[in-house]
Each structure stands twice: as structure tokens, then as C-alpha cells.
Length: 389
Ligand code: NDP
Ligand code: MG
Image (tube, rainbow, N blue to C red):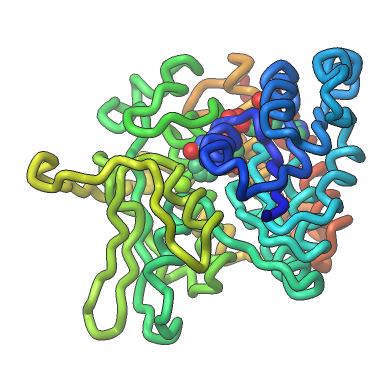
């Protein structure tokens, strides 16, 4: 039996992970499940999977979680410290699917105890890729990508020599507004941005898909994960979302990863790695699909991509600043304080202001410095959003 824990169990990735695990209950011993606001779902899954522990990040929801778990034998806990403690409990495989920079500390903790970390939380890689790989090395664990593009690149690179890689292309659906004019996008509401044409995901990543901030994060994630020269990494719009990434080699071969837009493929790949096991995902009928199309990912239309390039060039703690500014800008858009296109303005102004102040981005790579950069960037981004609103 493999001991597994799922961080962000109540979210879209978490629920897809539970779907796979619940199909083979005898194979898994569930250690911890965590969530935030949805304690009803958390308790239901913890009881169904007979987890040792269920944790909510919201301390005021502990009485409710306790009541829901009464008599079940599942331990209840709450707060960020309890999530960290849960990540330190021995497990063989841990899903990192909390949304946002809040996923960083539990991921590091899980790697510290030697677990295989299935990483959906791209924010950890963008903010602190180096710390993640240090923790992997020190703890003896392993990080496996779950983001579909990075799982695709990882699979295309199996058995290959990294020095033969000429380019890595990750695809973007283009999100909800791919056929909208900039004027229409300027007036877009959070509800319109939170509808994805192909993927069924959490609200925040869906809106980031419409602004291409998700793709911007993924460019940086590609750089951090595979240590590939940023000049070799590109994004292309592929509205069908069937090809997730392509790796180009120096002999001209382009290896594409093709599959339906169903995260259970990338989750299941990470769950069973290094083996492949049958997964309950649709098998593509190529003739029925007929064609795959591509468009340029225009950096004028999507300034997030240009900003990601700057971050990859700057390096240091600029990824942590970028992510925190992006999360804060998204909060400001969700609360209707700023418009859809103003999110990129907030992120750009925050990056500029923080580099003008100096010190923060060049600080040594430590968890404290990453968290300090995150904190400062949120503060500057909130001020910027208030100023331009
Ligand atoms: P969801 O919003 O659906 O789920 C987020 C999860 O994190 C929920 O369990 C939520 O709890 C929990 N959570 C939210 N805030 C906190 C916090 N401060 N502390 C602890 N837990 C918290 O997100 P997704 O599942 O869509 O995405 C999860 C991660 O995976 C993100 O990093 C995303 O970028 C990445 N990803 C997602 C993909 C997808 O298909 N959805 C694809 C590729 C990557 P609750 O719901 O109980 O409030
Ligand atoms: Mg992705």
C-alpha cells in the first residue's frame, strides 16, 4: 500500500486526484487531505478514503470540520501550521494542489520528508524553483510535474539528452477571450473570464488562462523545472488544447504530446511513474477531430508573456514578485476594483517599483527571502491597484 496525501484535496486537481485514488482503494493508504473553505467536501472525502487526518487552512472552520468528522476516526486540524505539520507526516506520494503561493511551504515540507511530490502548484516552481530542487536533493524525494504542459515536456524528454533540445513549445488554449477585441477585453467581467473553452479548472487558473498569465507562469515554470535557456522556450496558441507541449531536438524532430484536455492523465502519470497504468481518459479519434490549428501568442495582446520573459531574464526572486503581484492583481479584478487588462499593468508596475527599490530581487535564495519578496510585492501591488482603479 502506498501512503498518499493530497494538499488542496477539495479543488479541481484535488478532486481529480481523489477520483483516481478512489478507483483503487486497496492500493492506497491515505495519510492527509487538506482544503480551505469547503470543509463539507473535505470531511466527506476524508471519511470515504479513511484518511488519518483532514486539515482546513481556515482556523475558524475547525469546529465545523470536527463536527463533520465526529465518530469517524479521522483526526481534524486547522491553520497553516497544521497544514505544514500534515506535509511533514511520512507519505510516499504527495499531491501539491493548493492554489497560490500558499502551496510552497507544504511542498517543501513534503520533499523534506522524502516524498515524491506531484506538483500541480506551479506557483512553487515560479517563486522558488531552486528551493524546491534543494529540498528534493536534501530529502531524497522527487518532484514530478502535473501541469499538463510540463508533464508533456517531461514525457517527451524521457531517455533524451537535454543538450540536444533546441526548443520547447508549450501550447495555450487562448482562454475565454481568444476571439475578443482588446476593447471588449477591457470591459470583461470576472464571470466572463472564469469560463474556459476546453478545460474544467479552478476559478483563479481559469481567469489566468484568459489573460495568459497562466501561460506566463508556465513559461517560467518550464525554465525552472527543466533548466532550459529561456530563449529556447516559447508559447503558441492552440485553440483545441489537444497538443499540450512539443519538444524540438537538434535533428529537427519535434516530439508532441497529444491527449484530451483531462487532468487525470497528467495526475495519473505522476501517480504511477515510472510505470504507465491504464487511466480513465478519453481516447482521441484523430479522424473525428480532423485538424489541429495554431496561432501566434501575441505579446502585445498578452503583456503577461512579455513580463514572463523579463522575469526569466532577471532571475533571482523576480518570480516570487511576479507571482505575488499577479495573485494580488487577480484579487483586485475579482473584487471589480480594476479591469481585466489592468491586471498586467499592476504586475508590470510592481516589478518596476520593486526593482527600483533594489535589494529584494537580488537577495539570496532562502525561504525567508522568498516570503519577504512575496509579502512586499503584495503590498506594492495592492497600492498600485488602488492608485490605478
Ligand atoms: P482550485 O481553486 O480548484 O482548488 C484550490 C485548492 O486549494 C482547494 O482545495 C482550496 O480549498 C485550497 N486552498 C485555497 N486557498 C488555500 C490556502 N490559502 N491554504 C490552503 N489551501 C488553500 O484550484 P485548482 O485545483 O484549479 O488548482 C490548484 C493548483 O494546480 C494551482 O496551483 C493551479 O495553478 C494548478 N493547476 C491546476 C490545473 C487544473 O486543471 N485545475 C492545471 C494545472 C495546474 P477550498 O476549495 O476548500 O477552499
Ligand atoms: Mg497548464
